[in-house]
Length: 410
Image (cartoon, rainbow, N blue to C red; front, side):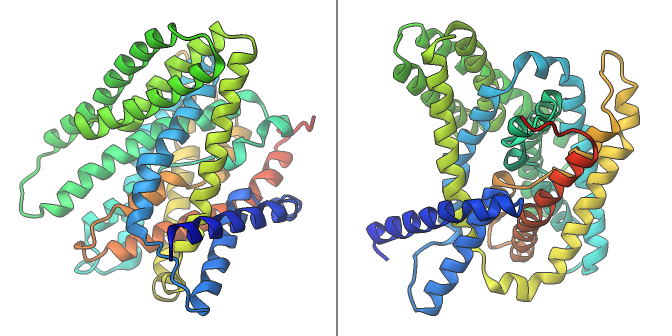
């Protein structure tokens, strides 16, 4: 299919999804779920008509990882309440590192036992699956929190966890993928821990350098459009420099850069310039999310459900159990930490139900090399988990919020 026809096809589907959006809101479905459904039905109709869209999963990975992911991370870091993030940093880091690593282990163990095929799906495949699945993306929910009157602290906890655990999941996935591709190589635990620390904190260091560097550059410009472009350039510079040039965490680099740029621009520009930059990033992410979930729907195949439906169910159940253990099992310990404001039970319920899966899960699953014999199983599980989170977990979140007394419509 010519690129011009593909663009018109995507535009038509996006318009159709926008027209159907009121129906999704009445049924308490996130817009992302409607986009996935529209893309899936549209692609199936085209296949039935004998039309080849030209969309393949390998090209989809590059678009998500190198184009969309830096936008999502930077926008969330740029807009987050930095002061409230700092006050809750201990809780967020506990959820994003030790609790996430615990979730990977529990998810991997349950999937390994559930599939029960050590030759076709060994331990390293289960660990890879756990690393792929654990990255949360609560944005389809948190974007509605202000309108619902949800406590601001809960939004910061969820968005902060999303930011930091994306980086942890990606670094962990990279380590497990290396082990899977080098089965004969002796790899020691100390080497794994050192590699994790270097990649994680190396990303923080690069983010500081890029953020401070572009902070100085931003002082040379006064117009709102110039400030917006500087933030966009800084996001991709941090990601490419860290991820591709220095082989450290690009997500952490973008996160720190976004925090620095957001703090300065929101403090320095209290007029229309700061408002314009916020609107600019809201537009970027709105378009990126729309295209990402629409394309996801177009790349989902019926064969995934026909051939790997049991693996999907096992993956979903394992992930929910692991998340429950991670949130409810560790909350009493986290609440006892010094200088930590306790996380109430009502917040814990939303942290569990609202732990949706999105861009990072898709990107990691699509990056699996096809020479790994179990890549199709992991990718199918990942797509199943994302679909479950959008069509089951997301609609359940609002009733849970109301039952917990966390909604105060404005």
